[in-house]
Image (cartoon, rainbow, N blue to C red; front, side, top):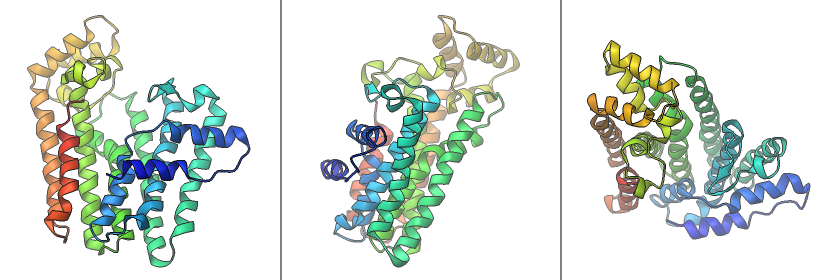
Length: 317
């Protein structure tokens, strides 16, 4: 999936020597590593239409820089001390440096596109990329707003995760399609494939946090429950619960009692929320595959995307 090549290209990005406190955190963040799924999707989207994936590499790096910029700022907002097992940028330096180094990383994404593309291709890339960047910010704000609300609906939650997480996957694929010379129709179908896979991925993540095997997930069971997060599971349970159980669930969200996870699990199982979540994952996966089927290239070329989607949505960690 081009991961080693992506890492090599990221490390080869030329940065000024100073100010040190601006560019050292930039380099530090990239050196923390990551799955590199988003830039890989850009290259995979490109090679559906053009075999020379190197033409899409600047767009792929743009996507990865944006993702890392958003992580730097998210960590500041969440007051997170660790990222990938290492101190977050704002912890290692400070919040002011974290904000500014994130900002310069974001600005460099536009430089990356402007330095390597031109004409109609650049225009199309800038249009989808800028729209997506705005949507990611909207999704982050919605997520923060939801923390103080008890009336969030499933539809609003799915809109939030679409904006915060999923549109960037769609954007990554569409940018690759654009650099590969795809038609507008194919590029849009590829975008919708990525977006719907992204929503299904987040729903699967919600499920694993509560019902996954801790030995496989490597996470504390019910971490989202302990944090009081309003995931699909909690929202769906609250919408289905009778008055007594709804009151019990609201009380559990507010408490730090030792039985918080187990008591919440009982309610989730009572209303079969585990099954409903799996069904919702399947619904978005089906939508995604329908869009991929409509991309006018040979099915053989789509195998890597099908395999990646299958891995993301059937993983146990």
